Length: 298
Length: 308
Image 1 (cartoon, chains in turn cyan, yellow):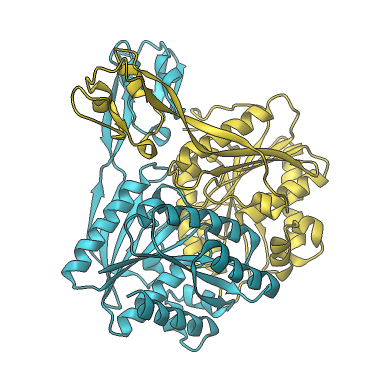
Image 2: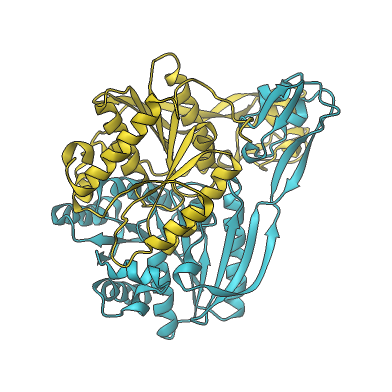
């Protein structure tokens, strides 16, 4: 079983659109597929796939939060000085307060509190679930609590459950839709995967962020290919970009998808573009890319 | 929550956020900063999207030099360590491992820099060590002060880097007579986004009229509500063919959220994006340019009236 991660250094370049179309293409062409939405901060893959039927969901409690016992607190302020995250505030009316949203639960406040007024308690990180899409394949999703830190942990849970369910279903491939950026949730999505599809747009800002993502991908030793999405606005820049991807990054160029307003219409209808309009320019390009991924990576 | 959010300085802070990626947060932030500066306001623009900063590229400037941002990691002195394992037991991130009687081994990428290990070491065997988590750049582009941060690739702790960026900006805001600071945020609603929102006075949530845009907008509106932070919506790509503008407007209406600006789809905007030349300068009379200018003037008037 192969795990293919769709990632990008910058947000909004088309990860979810591409992941959804790849999965549906595989499902309809005899490849047993499973999906995982590892963008636990803003999980949109099920939206792009037209929703799902909930098979199960559970709460993940991997976070910890400090709590101050106001009766014991003397307002000495030692905890405020040591908190590395600016989460302990005050003293107000001679008491300190922990801002749960900012607290990483490291517990140094508890360590320095001379009167034992601070406890560090287990706290919810988010939810984990599996849904069945109308295309027959499953989708594992996670939903991080607002403002939470522990995204990497939740991503790892999403990947674990998707592997188990995919194995049960006899799937050959898991398509993982990653979060934007290069931080903790992205690292947690990429490590140990078989292939990364790095999505970019032909713009300088996105190119710079692709370069940053490429450093992470290479560090973890995962093979990768690049898809240039929304091409067609700046031919000169696109030519340079393609050359740069192959020569400087040393990544395979998987293909390019032209700008196509049909993509927005498909999103609004909550259908993957290749399903919504298989004859659209973007669909043709996507199908070509999907065939390439099937032929060369699976 | 609002009374917990300390007003750190006197400069009004406007955060540009939105939930979904690629909706135009940086475009709005850069044009707002450029536009307000052209209106003779002293402006600081802060890119807190430490994973994927774009503001410098959109302003057409290269980032050079910069200042290292470091966090604490334990530096264990072998001569003093007795291998008691207290540090290993207390480490909340399991970044230290080792057997009784042996010097612990550090997994640097797991360390959050909390210093719990140092606090519990009875033998004073843990000195301050440092790891670089990123670089912060501070430069002036035209008259706008730009503060940009980049997380070091392979370093996972975006929230810590975002917080360091916010702190650096607040430090630089002190006593320098800035009229406004614009904080551009990362996509999403995770902690690295919460960090700049925590110090802001107003959030502009930039979104687009698609189900994904609406879905993610609701998340950022929820986060703003939790923080008791005033939030308004900027609808970008407002007239994208087949878009779901009505649904989005309904969401705003239902929640009593003001729609402050509507920016039409405009190829000029894309050209300015690629050229690294803000639309406010490059094509202020284009349809998107006019919409952005109207946003600039609204914010200017509200700043002058002390409403932000």
